[in-house]
Length: 475
Image (tube, rainbow, N blue to C red):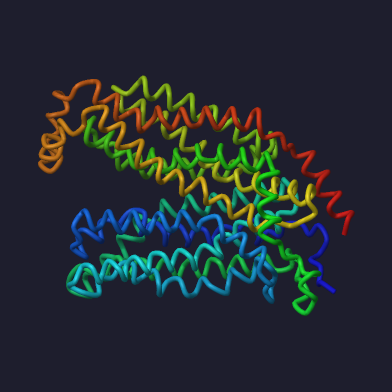
């Protein structure tokens, strides 16, 4: 017989507070790649820009193509000793720091050899860490138990996640400074940071493993395969194509990730290169703090208006703020304030969206009788990977249409000399065009996401509770 987790076990104080510490470490670790992978390849490994671009394209494409499979494998595989999902929190994370560090090591003067090693380390490290990442996301549904519980865990997770971005700049500087001083020169600081923050991730996932003890059913490892709660690829496929709320959620969720990646990558162009202000550094710090605040208040907002209502409110408010900011492009201070308010909305969306995925998993289980929770929660990475690709296209499109290349030499020379007098000579069309990437396009995606959720996602808290009660009654 399966060992049952305590029925409807309430969230412990430790779980509500510490769930997300693993995401804190995970984001610290992955930020090394997000911000410095390309800089490492060109400035430390001495790759040409063409080779660095080739490595980035190949590795990110492979990563995107594999992103949907991790939750599915967890659902289809034999359960672990500590549960189908909890077991992954300690089985694989400890391997990641060792592999990930090699992504930032140039092991040969032959750049082709180094590129191959770096590419392999990238792909392997992502494969290894995506299994515990998918399991960790699934535990929001498993341990949360109810829409309110899932909202609380999602909010805690999002708060820790956004807090890590605030800590990262200081922690990264500290680690790299110590390594450079100790080694007597640059070259190993990125690998050291990748390893150190990877260790924080390992510790964080172990904390998640401990605080979720007792919240997941432990399946009988000796039971016949037919009686174990494994899910076939057919079951998972049906869970997707017959689950309208899930399909529309995946599409609408793209807007959230566009805000994260497109806004972050275009901010430096708007504030520094085109407007010539010193607000870029302020924006990065304050935007992360605003996202932390949004993630923290999300649990209360979701309790008041539901997770779906909180995201609808945030999407619409963010769209309005960003579109207004676009038309105020000539006044950077006003744009800064409006975009910071929008980043608070991003924190709310980041916190609430996992709970909506968890609700679609309940709906899928109620409808089919099959548990595809791991597969469904793992699908959260799909819009994320798509957003990274879309970001690159939109940013370069906006820069090209605005005529950025015509002024690139002047902008580069002035920026290096810290003489921004050239800004007065830039046409308004360039300033507004760059602001389009920073504000307008994210606002358009948010409006689209708002209407998709408003008219297409009909799962309410009451319906989800009814579905869960019927599932529980089935045994």
